[in-house]
Length: 154
Image 1 (cartoon, helix red, strand yellow):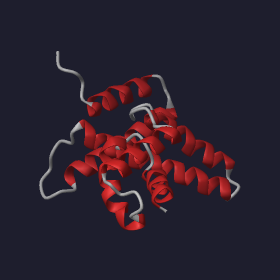
Image 2: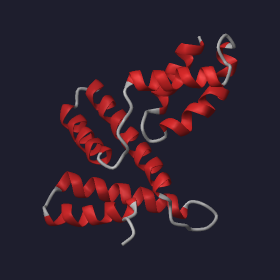
Image 3: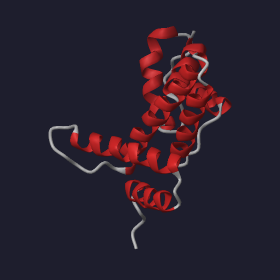
Image 4: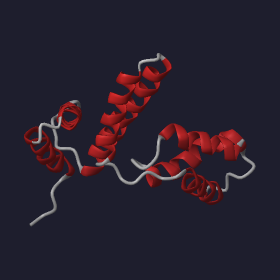
């Protein structure tokens, strides 16, 4: 039997969460599946997303939850922040394991070397990001990666 697509896994897990009366799990998976469906019908013609593309949607959904949690914390709304964090945790289970800061730094260092960008400063940013991006896709926050590239080029 062929491996289950990520979208099928999300659907199956949604059914399980509903049966288990797992409110955070079921509401989060519903929102994520809606986001996937929206992405599938957003182009000129409807299509089915690949697992890689689903990971991209999930990454962006997780990032929204992290940013919202931070905003709620800053606004003194701990309960709302906790809900966003719980949703982010549900989504994280479907994402590839996240890279550590040390691993990101090593990937960036290698990219700077292979691009011959050492000493070129910020004008090499695009070149280096082009090499780094495919390697960290879905496994690291884009902002953190860009910050590390800036740090190493700066």
